[in-house]
Image (cartoon, rainbow, N blue to C red; front, side, top):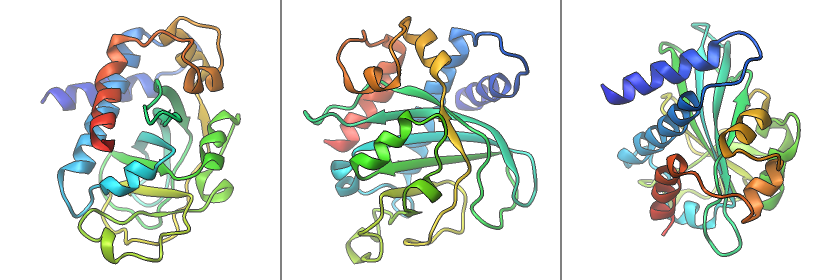
Length: 224
């Protein structure tokens, strides 16, 4: 019930019209929902991200998207992105917007919950661009689950592994994603800074906010 309430609050914020600043409580709800999405992905071996992949990962993007079509269309998505620093510690999360997403034929559900695991430095630097698309700008494939990681060989050359609660994926299948962009205003508002996305992700100049710590701690625990 708690997670459902967080989802409703965050989705309502994402769909709100206008250019007014997002309330801080909404941003906190987004981070909490991203943590819940990651927890759900890791709950079952048939879709969990293998520890070896998280250990090699350079970054991660967690998205929650509102489905507006029973077939392909999705819009009004948002999420959080983090990178792994040279010392093995995960960065502060920054906020991401996503306009649409297509995985092929879909059915049911009002939201699509997806985790993108970024496997090289190039894919992490896409987070700096005004718009990026993992399916076009970097090779994105459905990642192997923990239960099948040892026998999966076709995914070794991927730059981005994709994990989702939407059923019907198989490891190695090419995934096409819609356009995403960094939510610079929301990120700067949350941290109370004028620094840009690269500085927030890669530097130690920004003070961590306590509301972001649970997501950071959970991801660090999974990686270790």
